[in-house]
Image (cartoon, rainbow, N blue to C red):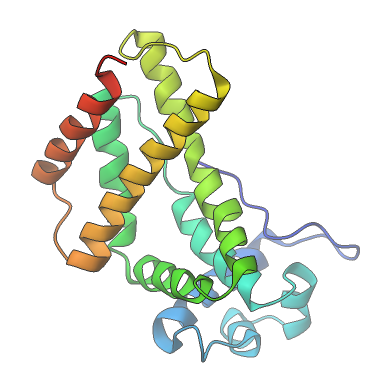
Length: 206
């Protein structure tokens, strides 16, 4: 699980973890009910039971707040040690699909991705707060598989980074497309088939 830190700390009274949690939950609730365009920081503050100034002490605007609210959901992902690379992949893919099945995750992710198509700064924040953070799971899984002898070590840092990018893109892209675009279930049978295809690429001779 990743740690959360919405914005750089600002001077003033100490941060309240309870207030942070209430604000992020209220943001997700407002996204589901109102959508991106109608969501305001004033509405979020009312739902969270805090002053609007409390939000501005933590986030500079709606973009930062919404991305952090969505990112918090994906921080719940962890990579279980299930004894093999195949089982580990299946476990994390099922977790990912379960999160995307939640209305606040599905609606929130679609809202920020849609808005990011016309906002480069928002796209960069999504990369930093969601994509780059969750790539840590790929690094962890690959390292664990290498220690087990399931994958060969990679000595070229650039090639290693490209591999991590490809693995993440294949997993995230496939699950998001099936869940949000196709509207098809990500069940155990689908996950097993997907994992086998992914493993063929990872274990094929160079």
